[in-house]
Length: 223
Image 1 (cartoon, rainbow, N blue to C red):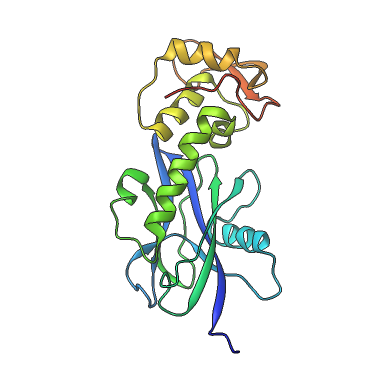
Image 2 (tube, helix red, strand yellow; image 1 turned 180 degrees about the vertical axis):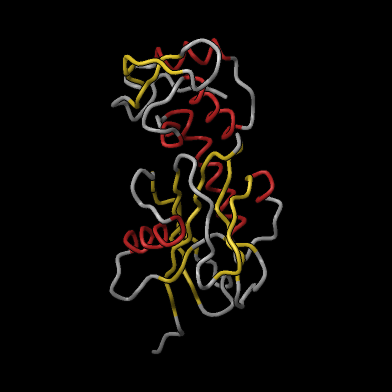
């Protein structure tokens, strides 16, 4: 029994904080299907390529960097009609990083841009990318409650105010500064003081921290 054409792809949800907003990298498709529509970056997995390697390759091609970025597998999407070209199964990945540079459209794209997620979810994205984006945002928001993932959005050394800005951008709500400071500095293994101060936040010098060894937060934070 023969089988119809079949392909495996990777799609990337690359999230960063830009101008205080949680933003996602979108590309404008230059070719059919969905020419002229916005989509998540991604591409086909090569026949001799591991799926994770394909995700890193696409990440490097779209952002220019692969170090200092948190990358984790999100989910697999395989609805029979998700791609009009052929039966395609996509392994989606969630990538988180501090403020990345302005994107440059690749040879197969008409444009590329960082788009605030509040606007991106309103776009009519190509394929099933709106569903993938919604799932990725939900994953990122939930993981900030019980893991140290928020530090992936921060530079190597950061203040509590900078970390709070990450939580506020991802969760989409304002947090009480004193309560937040008490929680994060009291969470075992979450932050490590560097012993240095900075004026990056303005006003009085603030203490600089780096990520601690803890991967899970106990007790978890609540929104």
